[in-house]
Image (cartoon, rainbow, N blue to C red; front, side, top):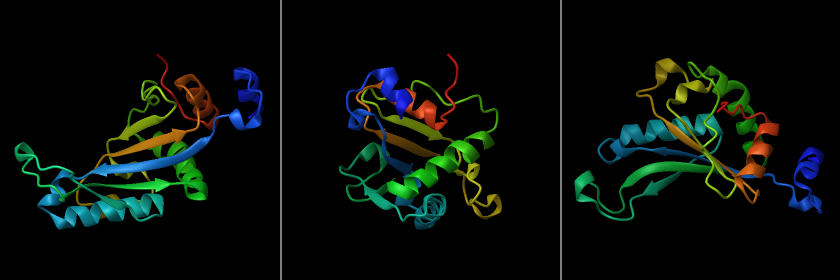
Amino acid sequence: MQQLTKEFDYGNVMQVPRVDKVVVNIGIGEAKDNDKALDAAVGDVVTITGQKPQLIKAKKSVAAFKLRAGQTVGIKTTLRGRRMWYFLDKLLNIALPRIRDFRGVNPDGFDGRGNYSLGLREQIVFPEIDYDKIDKLRGLEVSIITTARNDDEARSLLTRLGMPFRKR
């Protein structure tokens, strides 16, 4: 915290950026036809995060995707407090190093307002997921929401937390 205060010359300790919440999201297009896929994805998210996700419904009907308004298209869960820190610790120290040919996360995943999004191709990088019991490999998106005002502050915060950014 003192390092960030010195680096960005904050006048008040409350200006120092911190992680506000982590959102874990899985898009499940096949859930409209297959209820078992939805149940399996919900089970995976509960196992990974320790928290039951909420269902994301389609807002509009889209004929090209054979989608009607109100159908479930994904699930998400928002982690805060102790669960958030536990998940971040597990992500940084266990899950990311288990990815095949891992050379670091993409440094371009920032949104311009100090938030970082990271996509994982498969859920089996988390040790709680048993490879023999999953029906399908599913990707998931992890969004780390910070109180930083810009990307440089957030990048510095996440680097100090142990986020392994790829060298450009």
